[in-house]
Amino acid sequence: MKRIGSHKRACVYCGSDKQLTVDHVVPLSRAREFGVKRSVLDNQSNRVAACAACNAEKGALSPHEWFALHPEYRERFQREAKYLSNAVRRIAGLK
Ligand SMILES: [Zn+2]
Image (cartoon, rainbow, N blue to C red; front, top):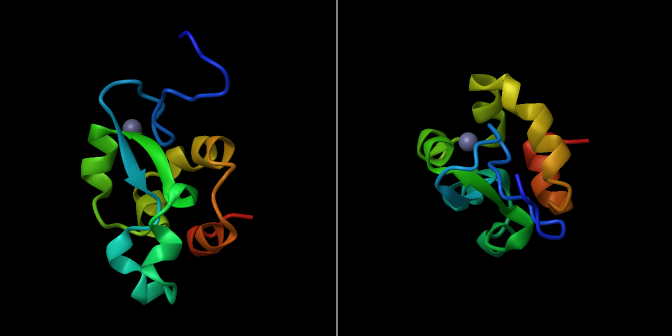
């Protein structure tokens, strides 16, 4: 796969390069539940590239719910999604 600069053109969950979309790691609709303002989640620090299949299946699942369903995706996600904000990392349970 050809890479330009540091852009990752693959799904941060499964690694597919097909039909990439923008996924919110922590769904905007669940901001209140996690005790943060929507604006904390509605920016680049909460957005990742995800293939259409992962995005559709993930829906409004929290990171914990999603990785409980797909533990095999966690390692890639942790490796690729280095730029997440501290708030997003805390909610996602990342170190
Ligand atoms: Zn995917």
